[in-house]
Length: 498
Image (cartoon, rainbow, N blue to C red; front, side, top):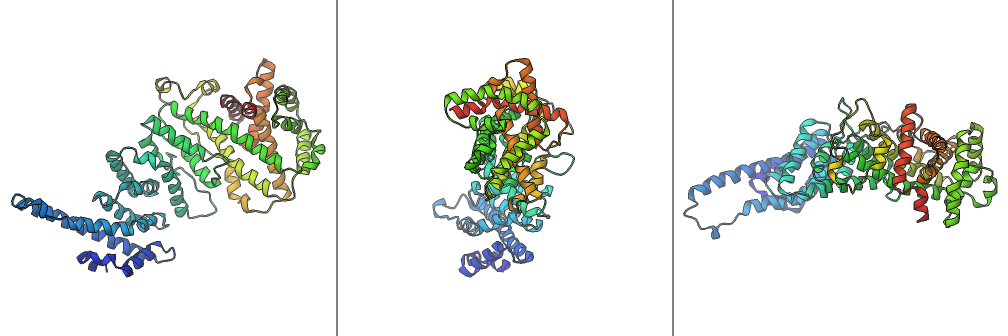
C-alpha cells in the first residue's frame, strides 16, 4: 500500500484507507509491527514528496525566466498538507505508546511534517514537550530541536502550551513505566538527577513574565480545588525540585507562592475535615485544648479571632511540655467523632498529599540553595529583578524524597480498605496539620521565650507531617521556614478574618 500511495497520493483520501490507517494507529491492541508499517508508509511518502519538490525546484530555476507565475499552481504541497491533516492526530497519539520503536517513527513523521511546513506547529508543541522526556537521548534531542526551531519562528508558542506539555509528558511517562506499582517520577534516575522537563524550563526561564506564569500555573495544580491526581502532583513536584534554576529569584518566587497556597488550602482542608465530623459528639471533644482552639480559629467573628490570637500561647506551653499520652487523648477524641462513612477520611488523605508535597518541595529548595529563613521572609515578587539576580550556589547530594506521598501511592490508600490503623494515622496527620496551621500566625512571635516554644511546636508538627525522615536540623529549619514564609502569605487567621 505504501508504495502505491507514493505514486498515487490521492488514494490516501479514500474512506477505506483513512479507516484502515487510523484504526491501526489508534487501536491499543493492534500489532506493533502494523503500527510501525503505517508510520513508515507515511514517513516514506513525505521523504519522496520532499525529494520530488526539490527536483521540481531545480527544474523551475532552469526555466524560471520564461514562465509566467500566474499560470503555475503548487498542487503537490497542498496535497501532502491535506493528507497529513487527516492522519496527524493519530500519529501524535502514537507518542503515548509503550514501545520506543513506535514513538521513534511517530516522531520522524512529525519532524518531516513540521520541516516541510505542512501543518500549523502549535498543535504539535505539547506532544513535542512530552517527547522531550523520552528515556532515549536521540529522541529527546530530536524533539527538543523541533521545539527550538518553533520557538525561533513563533515566539510565545512554547510558553502558551507549556503546562499542557507537562501534563502530556506525565502521560508519556505513565506509558513507559514498566512497573505499574511504582509511582511515576519526574527526574532522571542517573547521577545528574535532572528534571525530565528541564529543557522546557530552560527555554521559558529567559522571559521573567513567562517563567512566573508557568511556575504559578504548575503550583495552582496543587490547590485543593484543582483535584489533580496525586501521582501527577508528585511528578510535577519532582520537576519543580530539579529544574535548572540559575538565579536566586526563581526558587524564592516558588517558595513565596507555596506559602500563599498553603495558608489558603490548609485552612480549607481543616475546615472540610471538621465539617465531616459527627456534630452531636462535640461535648466529648471539649477536654482537648487542641480541638478547642481549632473550633475557635475556624469561627468567623472578630472577637473570637482575637481570642484565638491569645490562645496559642497557652497552647504552645501545653504542646511544648506535651506528653505522648496527651496526644493519644486528642487522637481518641477525634476518633470518636469520625463519621460511619470513611469517604471524608480518604478525601482528606488524598487532598493533603498536595499540601505535603508543597511542604517537602519548599524544604528541599531551602536546603538545596542554602537560604536562611529571613531571606525567604523578606522576598517580595514585586521587587526589581536585579536584587535577586545572584547565581545560586547549589548544594550537592540534596535529593527530593517525599516519603509520605510515595508510601501513600505504593500502598494504594485511595482504593484500599480503611482499617483502624489507617484511620488513626489519618487522624494524627489531621492534628499535626492543625497544629502547623495554628503556628503560622505572625503576631504570635513577641517575646524570646515564646518564640522558642512556638518554634518547638512547629518543629514537632512538621517532623510528624513529613514522616520524621529528615534529619533533626532539617526538620527544625523546615518548620521555621514554613512558619515564616506562611506569615508572608498573610497568615492563616488573617485569611480567616478576611
